[in-house]
Image (cartoon, rainbow, N blue to C red):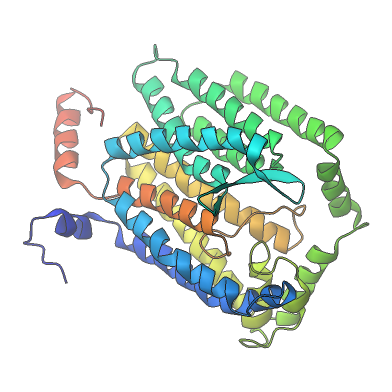
Length: 384
């Protein structure tokens, strides 16, 4: 145990970190590792691999992911901004390279191999994009002559174009939703809301018209015709699980779900541990979002407020999309359940997001005392 009387980086970190946030992130990682035992062996066996191949790889990524999250949580808000700018530049550069030398998986160019390790750059782009946009919104709010809102629109246009070029409509929708939410919180004018909403509707219509796989998924979702094997099987697994589940290792339907360890791990959880267990998972994600928004509501620094809101929205919306697909409430889309689904890039990137949240929600008594003093004197709140 670290004493309150100690004065050092680790002691300061321990007593200023939001320990409920930290415990929740670690809990989700533990749930994901537990579910990998249930969800991944059938997939490994179908591929002719050792039954616990994906379990071992999942475990292999746990320590570096946790290290990344803890390491980033030591950063100050200023350092978070700098790290996000560097990460965004690197991930955008790799997203461009992906279009030329990337690995094609299921018709999309999303992966690039570096030193024998496959990386999905768009996963790392998301938290960095949120933090940089939060900074731009905050600068515009502080000094209206700075075109922060316009720069964020241009940045979103670049990110959206690269995602559509892969193509990855799911990540595009996720990024657009989070960015729109942040822009709304930053005081988006109603004219811009109308214009951007019209552009979004036009983009969806264009995607449906131009991209056959997008049209196919939407048509299958609306009509129930065509190849709906995976989502139908996932729904069957949930139904068979009932309220309390069939028991650990007793799932049967999970054995024929192609992506049971990634996109449909929620269905495996329902079959083996029951709907009540899945409701607990949903409540954990809801707790993360509500706690993050509560932090943002009490935060006087615009950058911290926008960044924390955007980061928790990213986790919340991504989990909502994944669960919605599993429940057949949304068209099929390959998107992982944060910190639970198998996937090295996804896990490390979500831990980057978690690290940013932990860093920006740390209690800083000295800083808050100065802010309160300046606020009462009418001087204003200094920028980070």
